[in-house]
Image 1 (cartoon, one colour):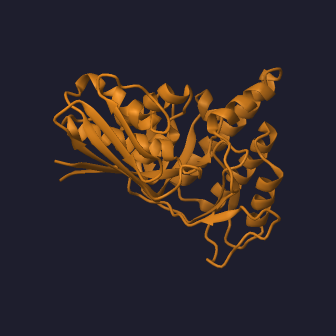
Image 2 (cartoon, rainbow, N blue to C red):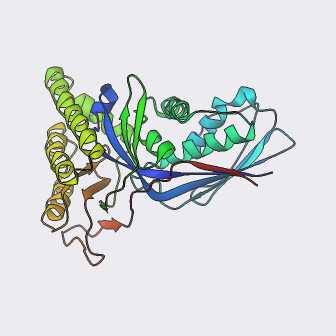
Length: 314
């Protein structure tokens, strides 16, 4: 028997940083997926194979969370008490974990889905979001779960942390995604912002409230498919991201160049910033290239997808 589960990557459209303070976010799933194939064993051994990270062996009893398979191992640890035997896990990814497309969330959700199918229990989508968020937090200490929600549901998702809610909009809109060529780990970016605003807590609260309001309005606009206005809200939130100190000269150059292009309704950082991705709402011709000074910038061909996590038994 084999359990094969796949989950999509994701992009944050609205709500970065504020979502960590309980504000809502708007996130979408993209058509680059991570597939986890789980094959049960008769012993207690766990063997993990990845096209990105090679091979790792451990024992079910001695399970510890170690890089580079920390999210897979943390998902196994979440269900450790229910597992009677070991397994082989194969991971195939359609995108690099160096690119900010929510690889941690995608591999976490796919692994959890495979385990759930293996032990033959029912888990509602929102409960899967909760479990995925717990796994992410057990590894890195923080995590809103917004990218987990996108990986579970697919499509455009209006996400709330308190209380935990996820509203899927079964619509898609064209996207243009540009990668800066480098990524600052999310946890590091969050710590840098927290340090920067440690003596300006009231200002930080106001910025979070404003970003949260962008997400509230953006969710309403997504519900009504008012893409032009959603693009405007994304542009407004970019100004707030700059105030947080997570934009850079390169990011602002890419965003400025995108906004000049006909067909782009708005553009901003997607995620924690200080590198990583810029997302533009709208489509550009395949011939579009960024002609700025940095040669590391590349366009990532992605589109929104309605397909969330998917699991099958063979």
